[in-house]
Amino acid sequence: MTAAGPTRATARAIARLQPVDLDELNAEAELQTRVDRKYIVPRTALASVLADLPAGARVLEIDGERALRYASQYFDTPSLDSYFGAARGHRRRFKVRARTYVDSGGSFLEVKTRGGRSATVKARVPVHGDTLDDDAVAYATDLLADAGIPDAPHLAATLEPVLVTQYRRATLLLPAGFSGDSSRGTIDTELTWISHDGRVLDLPEFVIVETKSGQRAGVLDRALWRHGHRPPTVSKYGTGMAALHPELPAHKWHRALSHEFATAAPHPVAA
View 1 (cartoon, rainbow, N blue to C red):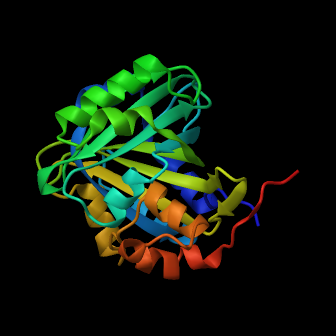
View 2 (cartoon, rainbow, N blue to C red; view 1 turned 90 degrees about the vertical axis):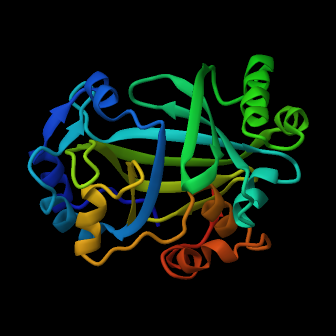
């Protein structure tokens, strides 16, 4: 089974939104320090959520496209320190990936560290391809050390590719709600995970909706709640690794693995 895109109703709902360009999106709701909430929503249920958004919601449009292709190469140590930090809920943990904007071009190394109050702090620099050169390793070392990650130089020096994710993303700019600030939302379809040993997992009947706001929930969260959707504990990296490597401890993502992810089985990369 291959990954599926949005339904026609969802595509129409997105097409009805007014566009916003990248500069204005960043100016109004950059939110590099934020609270992220992820929802796994049946692709057939998304259109009704979008129809319930307030006036003023807009969608990122680049060169006439509103659903852009992304690819992320995740890095971890041979001991999977990043994975185990997330799986075991370590107070100080990190995630390192090289994200490629397939349609608009450009790749960036992103280092995310988790601090107090569930806030995610992300910093990034341009990179070439999905490998880490000496400058990228030095950059990751500095950020991990600044976040108080133990043994940061060793961790950064031993990072290696472990997982690729691919998807199409629509990015929403949402008007201020109870929080008083604009917020972002993303809708990821055509979800695919590829392990370092060449196995593939597709999730064709679901989309991942991620909200990015301050400490208070934004208008997209509230629309999702009104339609009965609640944010499970899910991580593209952590849950994808657990689905492709069932020998790993994964109690944290048990709900998603036993429900939505249970609908798909890993398969080899097509020849």
